[in-house]
Length: 242
Image (cartoon, rainbow, N blue to C red; front, side, top):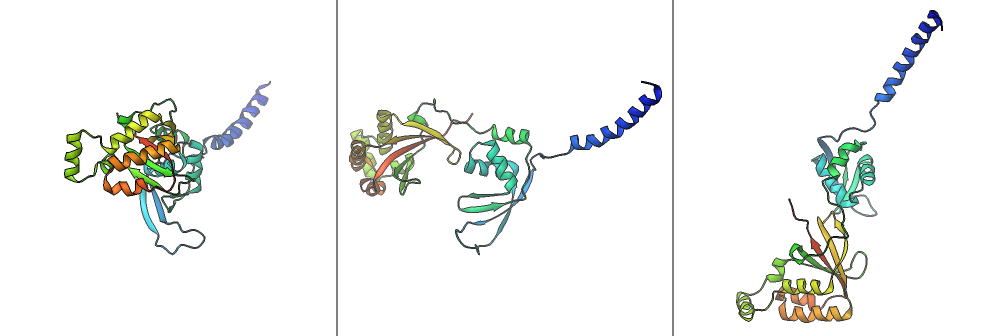
């Protein structure tokens, strides 16, 4: 190639390279903004809501946390909701200016959330709540029991139970779980706990009713002894914090 041809080639290539550079540097995804302006109102089905619109400022992590509780730790799904700029959470609809999040920045936030772990064994010591559920999806009826609610009783009844060395109703539920071996279901981002469940058979339902009559506080006894077809029991076990 002679000098003239070479110079011509360089002169032609330089503008082409300059024209390509802007395309290479175009910004599609953006880092997650530090704060996000959000509006929300109560979600009302089938007709236009007349409820007041509330404005609030979220940090990026707070907005992602709300979305994770709805969609789980699914990066593609979380990205889709951030782009759409709307989500329904606890009967409220939230809106914001949709944006394309930076994948690496989003992955850094999502990495802080636990993954489901089917190999994780049930440990009664980790259980923080028990839910008795009827059939149906979602269940038509549920009764939530915590160690505190299971321990409520008249002071004289507590003394009598201690003298007789009777177990609390919470201890009864944990003994029931140890005997029945709950099955791992999933990690719940809404409840921030691993969920284990037992599909109850008639004999187990009868056992629970009998033990509730003997050990449950009066405030729970009525609901436990007349359950609307309780079909399963769910155990919530939060992960230990480091």
